[in-house]
Structures are given as structure tokens and as C-alpha cells.
Length: 317
Image 1: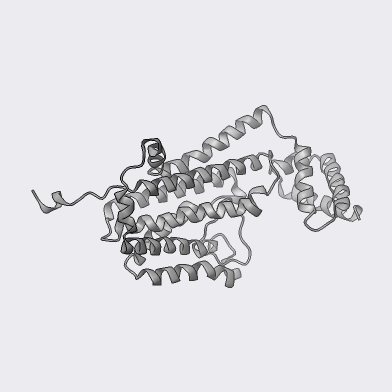
Image 2 (image 1 turned 120 degrees about the horizontal axis):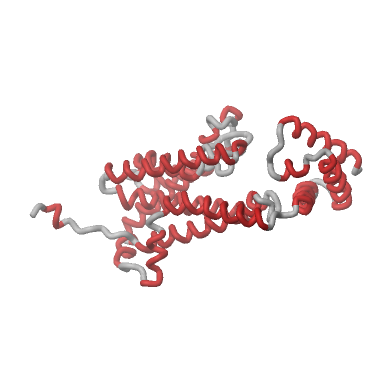
């Protein structure tokens, strides 16, 4: 027998797989809420503000931090090019599929550099940091996270360059996860894993052995994150769409809720009541209300909506 046959097998760490599963469940909760918002069952903009926005950023951070940890566990002692290339190809294919599908379903906000694009980028570039001292990697990660809060330029406003992460004005996208600041989170994951290896935390996790039987399904799901990511949103979106065919949301109630939410940011409640009532009546009379609420306005329609906004803003004073 060759020495390679006596090499100990490094088994997976179930606790890390379970952590991925928790992130997947959180992601599914967020996306289901986004679907409800898309079809008008909750207020427009709900998932893009406040606690929901922080929730989404926390989910993305957890995934990317675990990407960094996984890179160290898989390749710190030598890059295993064959499994790495296979996994990278799967992620790139998944990212391309997301871009194509969202381009046809939501062309004004398609995903041109989302979480899978970031994972593909970070998996490749992250290899350069696997052998650096972990304090340096951590400092670089923190610097990358801080940079977009300190620097911006109109040169990266377009979709062609927005993936860098320094635009003055963010382009519209349903999932934008640019290199800056998000690659910094991956570097923090790499630094943490290098530290954990040095102080023996990784071996202690391995020594715990397999997860209890009741947690094995969670560990199993955490080993198939890409498949779950690709399938869960079409399934959830389809379920909400099917429900909308049976019990569609009231477009007038939805318009009033959205109108008041956006109006109250700058004006008082009395003004918003007058303005929203005016806008609803005017849009309905021009047969624009339904098209506005389902996102099917043409350019001429948008001009008409702007006219309504100006007229009702003046009339509500």
C-alpha cells in the first residue's frame, strides 16, 4: 500500500454545515417576504428598509464569512484544483442562470452581480490570501469593508462597473453584492479560520463527531447550499404567484399603503391623505393604476404618472 492510503480522512464538520442550513432558512424567510412584497401582500419597500434590510445583510455576511472559512478548511494545506474547479464551475453556472432568468422576469432590476457572482469571485481571488498571516488578512478585510463608506465615484455608477462597489448612485438590481465591501467579509472568514486552526478550535469541532441524529437533516442540507439556493426562490415565488391567482391583493389598498408610506417620509398625514386620494383617482381615471401596481408602465405611462404626481402635489397643499 502507498503512504497516501494511510492518510487520515478529514471528515466534514457538521456544526459548520448546520450553520449553513440556518443561513439558508433565514434566506428563505427573507425571499418569501420579498415575494409577498412583489405581489402586493405587504407594503412596497418593506424588505429594503429597517430591520429587514439589516436581516438581509446579516444573511449575506454569514454566507460569505462561511465561504472564507470553507476555503481555508479545503485548501489551506494545498489547493485541490480538481474539486475546486468543479465547484467553481457550478457556482459560475448558477450565477449565470440567475442573471439570465432575472433579465427576462425583472429586466429593470435583473441580478448582474449577486451573491453567487460574489461567491465565484471570492472563491477564486480568496486563494491568494490563504497563506498570508491572519492578522494581515483581517486588516485587509476590514479595510475593504470600510472603503465604500469613505470613497465613491460616478465612474462606477453603470452596471458594467457597479460590481466594484464604489458608485455614487446604486443601479437598480434585485440582488447586488459588489466586491466592495463584501469581499472583505470573505477575508474576515479566512482570517478567522486561520486563527481557529492555529489555536486548535477546528480540531475540537472535528472531535465532536457527527451531529445528533435529529440534526442530521440540517447537516445534510448544509452540504447542498447551491442546489437549495437555485431551487428555493422559484418554488416560493411560484407558490405566492399561484395564491395570487386565487386571492389577488386589492390594488387600491396596496396603492394607498405604498403612497402613504413614501409620502409620510417628507410630509404630514393630512397632506398625504389628500395627495394619495387625488393620485389614486387620477391614475384610475387614466387607466394607469393597475399598470403602475404590476410594474408594466411604458415610457409614455411614466410621463403621465409624473404629471399626476405634480398635479396632486400642488392640489394637496
